[in-house]
Length: 588
Image 1 (cartoon, rainbow, N blue to C red):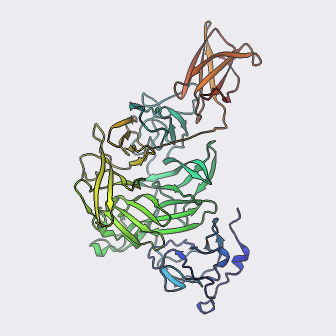
Image 2: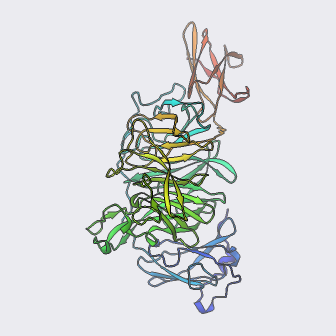
Image 3: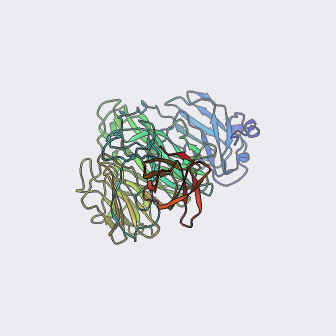
């Protein structure tokens, strides 16, 4: 798709405020960066939402230091907005004035201004350690030597567990140096490996899950490098054939951090970035030129890469809400907010979790204002006994209205163990009470990460973050599924989703024989196979069915009587349909 619209761009010759035409409609238009924002990126575009691209009219952008800015207008793919992409960046520290002929939300009519931040030093990659690829903590396969995933162990499995496959990612994180390659993974409902994609050393895959894009099921994750709980990467979108169909990149010069990649039903992705800015903390009795990580939310138009919405934490949540100590020395880093999840609440609001303020925020998208705070130093709600949480992750709204989260509780330890917490929030009485409190046995205290997913049958799947467990609880708290990773491995989040794969690769097969039998090993990375039909014969053109065996694991072994010269494997569905056939291979 060509993002440029030359006819519109030609109409946007820079004009003075007096020359700008009046708005052609009365509807209010949202502008990003937001009016009054104080930590805008030098590479920001001017995004306008709630107006047809050909109705934007003239726009003038002037920096107090950089002067007038030329650029081009590019339409958002849904036709409900456009971005003015500048030819040159802003100057750090300057005030920028934007003049339009539109009625802008939060502005004095059609004109508004914002301040450009002075960026701090960029995040650098953390140390890279080679994963452990030997020992009992890994799996190896005769039929596919390229895969060395960690070995998962299911300790509890009940027929009452929710249907669906299990989605995981990361594993042998550089900081933990656990066994197995790093990469996204899908397990079947029984915890057996279904699909695995190893990634290069130093690259991680986090937030691996099934979503919907363009009305079709897709597989998504964040991919990149990380350090100190933050990171630099992109969002990737794969279809059910495991072919990458889209990449989501941060806008305005920012990279996406690992904490969220949430697709919407209108072709956009909600993502997070950590933006280091020079910031005065003297009001907190700290450094006057600290490097503060500003938590930034962006909504990216997946097809064009344009920014449709942007929100900065420092505009709405001051550093005094943080439970981390501010630096006393200039140029030291301060991760005061550490945003770690975004959830869409209808079309107009977002629910945001900030680990280091121990709070969850409901944000009005149109204005950017915080509607309320749950937890933390400035909670809107009175927290009932047991409802207080700390260092939390992954705030969501369950179908029944309960707010779910993973309450980590360490660093320093405020809880004896982590838990999957559900809270009933009453906006009229301004109270928050405990709806459920799920804990693992034996107790787990996660230093970081973790999530809680409400499943369609009412169960809750809890990923224990830096602790190597995934647990599914019934609504009454009974454990119906429990699985552990090898020591040293972890998954940022764990999910259960229905998944119907259709890989375009062929099954992998290898066989060897003795004088009396033939051993056949077969696998098909990413396929949902019910059983395997093994065909064998004295030549490639003379194969007949030798046996049919139930799929036993990622790799299935079949033993044939006699010494066959050639074999082929066919993957079968439960109804007996041939899903795919391997190449015909010579028996070794």
